[in-house]
Image (tube, rainbow, N blue to C red):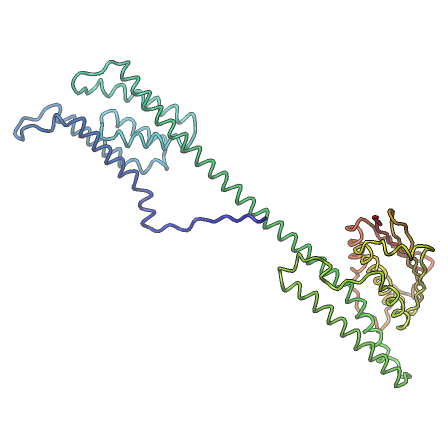
Length: 409
């Protein structure tokens, strides 16, 4: 199951402007409403009356409210100083009540207890002293004013904590979704890389055998001048046949690499050999000049039908690589192969051949270039399947290879 996260598109300038201005518009409208209800009885007066204390209060209220509204957009850059200043301005301004409430909610969203405690204590003190400094009519008892302030501040606190919690939850879910997406992409890439490695190993196992036959017969045509026309035609036929088979197998494997949808297809979709084709492989090796003596444990041949197909395919590749390796490094030397095992335990293959003189320094001219990774890849294949590969380049001039795999019933 894949996880995909739809990232938000870049907002237009209109949406950006609205996102930054709707709170200020709301604060202005609510502040104007609070201001009208508070000073309604003092506004309907003759125009030619003398200035009074209430006029100074109205002017100071409007001035502090507009200053608070102008400072509000800076709350994200300097949270505590700006919100604290707005709270102090609200001491003398009813017009700034909505701005102060929004600023307190914005600070609470940050969910930092020390900041919240300092500013809310300051807001409580400002609300308590505002009515005492410039009362309008009969002031409320201090305990009633305290109850009102506690209720209002508690409401702001709960709203801020709720919005902050929702934002943290959304951010956490977004980070988890992005992390899951990255993990899923890494898993898919690792699986693809592993499957491509398996296909590359399969290409080596298939093509190394075919191309070694082509190189061997091409070398015979190049260096031997005593071949009869019939022998020349036979060698050319082997070259043509194996080149054709190699191209076909290469086309099948590369077709899977081109189509990413087939990377996880079942291995049985590919042309896979089994131990049933082993006699043909042995006869082919003998026909091209690599004598191979194959022996099987008495009573085992009848039980090979019980061998799992994957295990049989791995064991076929082991024998194929043993013959290819002998043909490349010890041309003309006989290879002794022995297959043994028991259902429910393991199946084991032993291969041995004499090394060519100075095999580490010389190479037959018709041999293919060797990457030196054939046996390494083969050992990795067996270990991944639960088995192992043991190599022994003995000092008596013989090379021994032993491979085993678990044989599950």
